[in-house]
Length: 83
Image 1: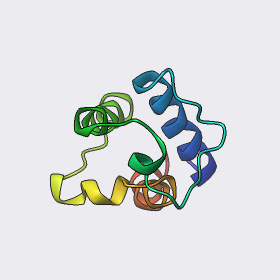
Image 2 (image 1 turned 45 degrees about the vertical axis):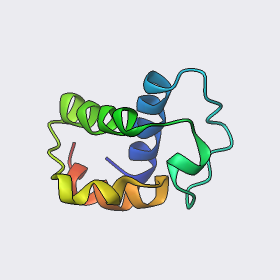
Image 3 (image 1 turned 90 degrees about the vertical axis):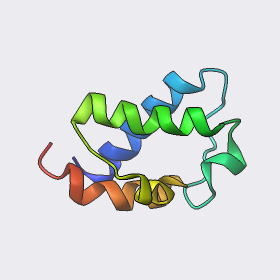
Image 4 (image 1 turned 60 degrees about the vertical axis):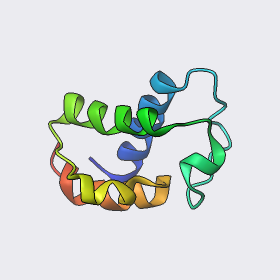
């Protein structure tokens, strides 16, 4: 998957987790929690969706890498290469 594909996939996951949120103005460099009404369970849902959809295992110590769209795409790009 390309970084653009990964970004699209994360937006799709966010739509499922937070269907009432407006994702059209999502800023890549700003933390998801600062832009969206996400709690810790929603964040874990993102991790679980990545595991379910793409068999990606994200260790708990790396959860901070998924704070913003930019950091999420950067972290996932090597893991999702070839998917």
